[in-house]
Length: 418
Image (cartoon, rainbow, N blue to C red):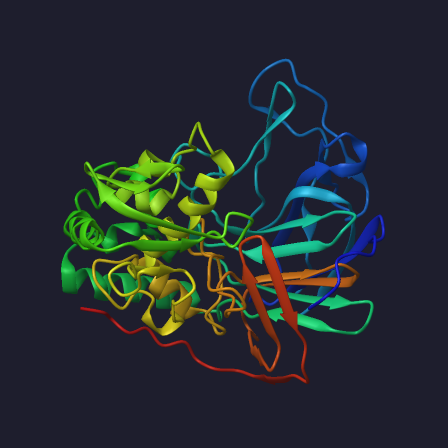
């Protein structure tokens, strides 16, 4: 287990590597400056000067300075320096620049994939997420909203230990889109509607949650039969949820139409939109026992997305990764996205970091309490998977093991589930 007890430095070196085929790639770094009252901060184009926007007089005001960091030719590395930042994102845009705007506050208007009038909608861009504070650097690749540009992470600690999240190869988006098309040919559920194309080919693949934001009727009723079967099963037997926190194991049965965790709270039947978002309907914040119900929600939502509730009545402790997404209906987007990543890792839905205690990490995260160099690679041209280094991360718990590593390159294969 890596230690996160030592204080980190106040700044961190970040290496941005261009593994696209373009010499016209820009990075942007945004977040909240922890040591400046959590003020909105961006890095300027030199990769070191901090820009603290002031509140504009009107909405949609352009940034006052250039914050696009040019990455240079394919294969080149651009070094930047970041302060301690919460809620950070590293954005990449290929063959164009991104437009960020300011609202009074100031509030940053970020690029959107669900707003067709957004100035960045038809551009090729993506991001990874990070927090760098006095305890650690934590970062992950995310597919919660969409898939577009391959991003890989490598974190080197001051002790010399290294963690690597491989991401997708250069053709990862094509692999995902082909998988969505193939799955839709099997079940006709609308997976192909998640593909957003440009004149030159696929631009991005939306997550089901984002797809529903754009088309509320998409996947309507998709999980209904499965949810009914779950409710039927747990009318006659108990479901156990390990909160993996101070509340330990909690049990529930269906009582009066709700999944009842006696003395804690209840869950009504979720819709497909609730399951894909993990945050609406019965999965919205509970007014009572909020933290405890939140821990249950995370594990229930993960089990619904992976369709394991009929296979395993002890969540998530008895789960096996090979059984995830093996039962339809399921979150086939998540299945396809994981399969397209060389190491099968990456956040494909909001609680994709839930897993058995000491289990295999699925979330595509790196973390260390004494980071020395954080490398973020965009484009996937030389994407590789590192074997022998394992990061096991259950939500709220971090388990990291380091071993001698061997780097190999493999090809992702998509399998269609009936």
